[in-house]
Amino acid sequence: MSTPMDPSIDILISEVGPRDGLQNTKKIMSTDYKKRWIDAAVEAGLREIEVCSFVPPQLIAQMADASEVVAHALTLPGLNVAALAPNFKGAQRAMQAGVHKLTLTISVSTQHSLANVKMTPDEAILSAKKICAFRDSLPAGQRPIIESGLSTVFGCTLEGVVDEDAVVRMAVASVEAGCDEVGLADTTGYANPEQVRRVFRKVRQAIGDKLSGAHFHNTRGLGLANVVAALEVGVTTFDSSLGGLGGCPFAPGATGNIVTEDLVFMLESMGLKTGINMDKLLAIRELVAAGIPDEPLYGYVPLAGLTKGFVAASSRP
Ligand code: COA
Ligand code: ZN
Image (cartoon, rainbow, N blue to C red; front, side):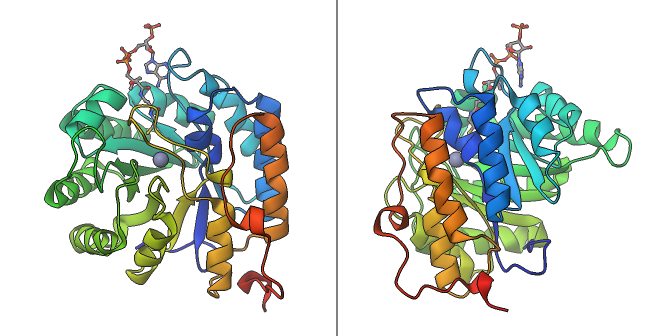
């Protein structure tokens, strides 16, 4: 299991709001607001942000400014700049832009794979292999870490149950294709804690430390329960989205990611250091709300406030 690179934290939170969050909103956030959001997130202590996806702008207009957003993010010291790509062209664009980490979206379920990237899962693995070979041909210093972001791992709105052996096979195939890491995503919000423990264990048995993080959606309210289950089996990297924005436009009924504010509150209350300042994190909501007016933002802690006497684990020596 990969551990956070920074020894001062226990858990790495990868903010995916600017990508997973914005890919599903009705209104387009201006490039200026995206930059200010990323600045504020770094100021709050976030160390990794998935800042955009490299998709055809005619398909997802929100991501037309991807290269400009990456260029800005790269000016922020200490930030691990991540982006998502669905295919070879997107991966090339992302590498040209200079991302540190590139996540490839690879569905385990065939129907979601076809709907999302117009490839079967096997074709997506071949594409990953080509992308990794291209990455390896670049000069040292220009080669991003490549993560296979396995989607619909815990169930699919189009197909229903997803075979756990197929998940393991896709994880192994991703590593064989040259991916450095494999993350498991509950794209559709189908996962339950018992399943999370079981599937993470199975995949770790097959690929060991190449298993990286967990990406949960809160569609059925089990997001944080699934985080606790994943913590129990040694997962230390979690994706989440400010205000719980998010959802795959090609997975019918998918809603937002787990809420960064609630996740950080839970982990810090449990004594796990994220390095993130709660007050600064909560303040970002206002900025995001102004950047995409009328878009609902979720989260319990932002509404209820911090508990009286709350002391974040990160603020302890
Ligand atoms: N970035 C920019 N342009 C791209 C591109 C990319 N990543 N991939 C393809 N294009 C362009 C092609 O050059 C072509 O342009 P042209 O018409 O000017 O020649 C056009 O888009 C169509 O290309 P094609 O290869 O036929 O793509 P497609 O229509 O089969 O779509 C994907 C395939 C993968 C690009 C599309 O399904 C996709 O972007 N899916 C990702 C969806 C997503 O982000 N989901 C959320 C993540 S969970
Ligand atoms: Zn997602």
